[in-house]
Image (cartoon, rainbow, N blue to C red; front, side):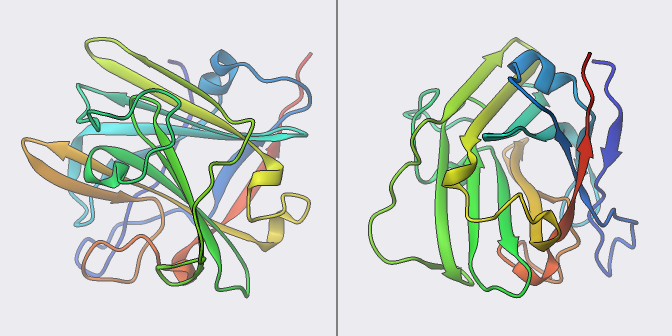
Length: 223
């Protein structure tokens, strides 16, 4: 793999672990292939809500070019996938199975966006006008979305590229963006909840906008 990992350790009053305060996003110019996306420095999610090490850690890469936002995940083992959700399908309810969730919000605003990506490449997105309060009306899948998924006996990968126009936040003003990456994994028939940010809640709850982290854009020069 050869990637540098930024370890996001969930910390709460019981675990007492350190956690990072920013989420790195690699910024590039021009087209970006899935292969290059997976080669970027990544975030490691390897501890659950109680600070315990999981046996199926995740490596996540975030990137940005002039037109798209990219989100890639690498996991190990055999994931527990939604049975009727195929690669590229827009599927609500992925959180009932193994899923990685990206939350995007803005400083001083109550609205936020949730993005879900399953190991099989199914995905979902929803806008909220407040804490767990969806915007009224039907949920429409953003257009021009590309999805990648691949799996072997020991490793799985999934990635998505979303047009910037389909996101709630404005990457021209990165200092206003707050985000978090979370995941739900199944290990030995037990649900494990992981979060990059420190969430101020006793029970797993990924919708707490006030606990989201700022982004750190990292320009990458390619020759």
